Length: 261
Image 1 (cartoon, one colour):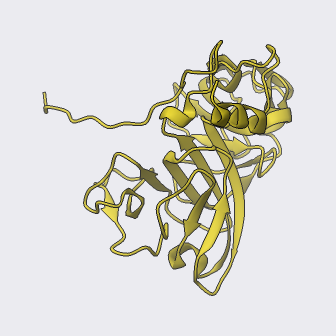
Image 2 (image 1 turned 180 degrees about the vertical axis):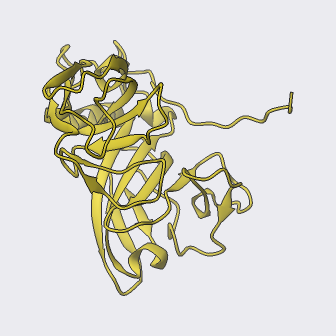
């Protein structure tokens, strides 16, 4: 095992299985039916209380907006990828992050997470070479601001959402190198069906993201605000730290072109 893989695994911690980390330790797709009753425990096997992470929930048989909860902002606080609203708080939504998943309240005051619908949940545990969630604040005045992350590799996909006020969901993807050849200038908004747009300068992300930081420009730093950032690994050689021998990647970012049929 290379030194960088050893360093990444030490920085991220080890799974309960005894040193090796597997996809089931850090990612879960879990289907459940809500019961409109507080204390509904979703046991997906992920240590979210100890390691931290993100839970993304969507009703499968209703048009209710998806809700995103993460350990950096804390329980009962969510943003919805179905709109550009600021963060909301619902005491009856996700009420605890656990060492084997999460627990829901009645889930119907604001956030639809535990009504009598069928739901899908996607959970991402923090892990070098896979995923990280970062909460940060800007103090105004413009300039640049470096936001640290713990991937240990250059991100392949970055989502930035203002939580203190309404603002678009900005997503940046390494495979999107048009209209600008610098991928960190191109963005899409999760809530619209619009084509990719871009910043003609480095006012959003100021420079190429690194294995430790995403440096923001004046578009984000010009005002006083709170943000959350979700950072996904690319799946390159630096992310090959999983499996029995610590030499496999479990994530991959890429793109595809359809033929219109």
